[in-house]
Image (cartoon, rainbow, N blue to C red):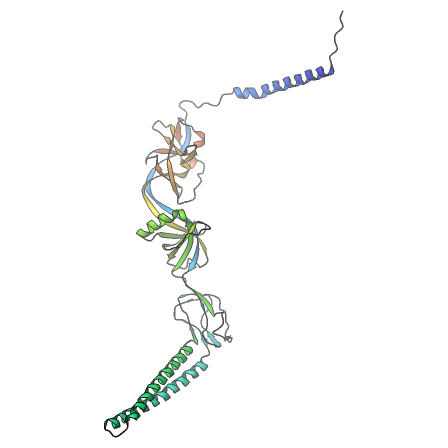
Length: 395
């Protein structure tokens, strides 16, 4: 009897590895292959998928251009004293609305009153001398005409009279200047607006050469809002604004509340090379002081209004490999995808330029559960999942 050949250790190891691989493969078949054989749930022929539907509508669609704006006063003046002297009175309170010509403060006027009196006396003196020269000139002229006096006296008096008239004019100018300086002792409001913080106290010595003023007055009405938009919108802004000034609405910074309505008043002469934007300004009536200088607001420019535009809820528009499309529900309550040309979104409504007609029904919500040819049934909006509201954009 021939003895059995012993199994080498290397061969025994290979057999063991092969057995482990076979066992692992069998386990994989047991736990994963049955799942492969399970067929996907099939919707019965008469069954339908509940979705939220809505008909496309025709409506006038305002096209807005949104930007962040900064409220700016049309005029801001640092009121300074124009003469030196003691500040005797302050006649306003901080934050007070003042009108143009309202007296704000009083500088000690006594020095300037004395200068006015001195100038008046000098004018009176020189006017008296002028009157005397006129009499002497007339007398010399009469004597010369009667051959009773030299004509040289006439020429002398005429020259003296001209010099005295110039002296009186200089005196009158000095008097006018003294009166002007006296008037500067009453500090008046140069415009209608709101006062800021008082910068000088009663009793302090004010100097006309000081850079620090008495108070800053800011014009509140009308008021402007400055903002910037992309240069891509400049051509349409210029075209529409040439027809009539564009309407601009100032909103709160979060865009939830309208503050004021005005018109476009300024378009900058050049586009910023750094940002590619153009600076604009709009002017607003601010009777109720809702707009405050330095405040940040949302500025919305009404470019135009598209009349009879076809619109659908923004959630109805889906994006595919070929671009935007919507699921249209046909007469058999089955859906088919249709390519559309989508444009601006305004207040959650998508403007469909082409590919869809008003009155056609589209799926607004539930697109993830349907496919071409699937039958659908409408559900009420109350039973549907919340639809996100799209932000308003111009394009």
